[in-house]
Structures are given as C-alpha cells and as structure tokens.
Image (cartoon, rainbow, N blue to C red):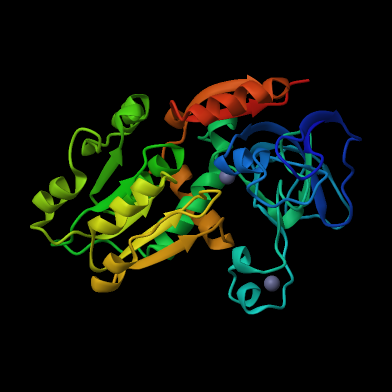
Amino acid sequence: MKALVKYALGKGNLELRDLPDPVPGPGEVVMRVAATGVCGTDLHVEDDEYVVVPPVTIGHETSGRVVATGPGVSSIAIGDRVTAMTTMWSCGTCDACHAGELNRCPERHGLGAQADGAFATYLRVPAANALRLPDNVADEPASLTEPLACCTRAVLEVGNLGAPPHPSSAPVVVSGPGPIGLLCAQVARAAGHRVIILGTGADTARFAIARTLGFEELIDVTATDPVGAINDRTGGKGVPVVIEAAGAAPSLATAIELAMRGGTVVQIGLYGRPVPVPVDRLVIREVTLRGSFASTPSSWRSALDLMATGAVDLAPLVSLVLPLRDWATGFAAARTKAAGKVVLVPGD
Ligand SMILES: [Zn+2]
Ligand SMILES: [Zn+2]
C-alpha cells in the first residue's frame, strides 16, 4: 500500500512509500481509508516542530470502512463505516488513564505520531478505537470527526461550556475562523451559547464558510478593534470563555484581553515555538489560560452525537479534496490557511 512516511527527524523528511498491507492482530481491525484530513499538526511534523517517532506513517483525521478483523473482535464488523480514535495506546495504570483522560497519559501513543497513521491506503487500529460513523455524514466530511472530538474536548470539557448558558450570560468568543475555530463555534452554539468569531483581513473565504454555517457575528480584527467591539456587547465586562483557535501570538494576546475577570482562555492547537503572553493581564484579572490537547473517549462520543443530530455540519468545512499522491500540494494549500480543510483520499 501507499503511505506518507516521516522517515527521520528534521525538517521535511516526508515521502510516499510502498509498505506491506497491514494484517489485523488479535483485537485489531484494518480499515480501508476513505479520506484523511490535513491538520496543522501534520504541518508541524513536516517542520520538525512536533515530536514523532520515525519512521512513522502520519495522518490522524480519518474515515473509512472495515475490511478485516482480527481474532476476538466482536464489537465491529467487516463493512462498517468507521473513524478512529487517536490514542492508540496508553499505559492504563496512571491517574489520567484511570480518569478516562487518555490524552494526558504520559506514555500515550498518538495515531500518526507515535503509531502509524492514516495517510495511507489501509489503517490498522485496536477494535476499541474504531467507532461507527452516522449514516448522514459522507466519507470526506467524516474525516473531520477527529478535529471535532478535539473541539468538543476544548469547548465542553476544558472550557466547561456544556451546560446551557444563564440568560444573562455574555457570548463566547472564538478567535480564528479556520476549521478548528468553526468546529468550536458550532459546538458552543449547539450547547446554546451565542458565538462571536474573530478573524483577520486574510480570512475572507473562512468568514464566508462561517456565514454558510449560520454565524453572523464575525469581526475582522484588522478593520475593527475587537476589544472595543466586545466591550460594547458586554457592557465592558468581557466574556466568560474565549477559545483561541488561530495559533497566532496576537490572537492569544487579544483572547486574554477579551476574557472577563475570572474568565477562561482555552488554547487549542499548537504554535510550534514559544510565544509572548501578557501575564500581568492574566494575574490582575484572574484569567485562567488552559491548554486543550487532542481528545478523550467522552469527547469522541459528544462529537459523534453532534454529527448524528446535524447540530454540527462538517461538509462546508471541506474545501479541497486531493489524491494522496498529491500530498505535497495539499500540505502547501493547508499552509495558506486560505479556506477550510484539505482532505486527501488514497484512491487505488
Ligand atoms: Zn488534527
Ligand atoms: Zn496512562
């Protein structure tokens, strides 16, 4: 089969290779990959800014169909349409594992980083990682289940926005209208929150997708001062939760400015390098800055529920579908941040 392999640490060092087709061991399934999304993390891997264990097939946002099951597998059957939870292995004994927060296990093996991933024709995963997809979501958008599970983690679990808002509550702000921001915005809206989305003058296409998804409160921070705009809407109080989904230092500083006293900024996504943080502002206003990393089994259940009910619509976020052999073009397109998600399909 074809597989996109990070074959050594260092910048670049990615190539499409011919690997043997995987065979499921006991308790494992093999899925034929239908589609795999290009994530910011994949670009960090290409840039040597995110630690993987080479040689490893990368790619972790995927959908497909089960084509083989190993001995002892009864939960999932050949022909099932599935996605794959990304914690491929965790120790099972640490506090995080006991709490179900497998993303925090210090020995976690992540799909496409420490374990072979989904930019490939076939993917082998433990049967427990293969989750059935709702029928109403097509293969290419369904590859976005994984980023959605990261966003349900960030919004509902880390940001604690699962409960309906109090009638007097201020809106939730999402900074960054890329795929992650627009997924977080949909999750917050599905939980009943009013959502304001911030972007820049370079985000015209992304704002258009936001409008397609029904978001109307969009602020271009290069044209309108976001602090003034949010203060106008909140009587100067700021907002309880800001989701930082742009992965840009100025966006993080703005997010901290916008949080109310005692509020929370949830950081989803990586920078690849240290960034300045206005710490005094955090201290004086007792703002909490919380990281949100990857996903948990419970955030995957939330994601699949939101897809099944249609409360989150993934299809408008897919803006470019390319064959796996054109991965380099796809990665370059993802770097431009021009529109929504780039998805690679393995084909023959
Ligand atoms: Zn990802
Ligand atoms: Zn553990």
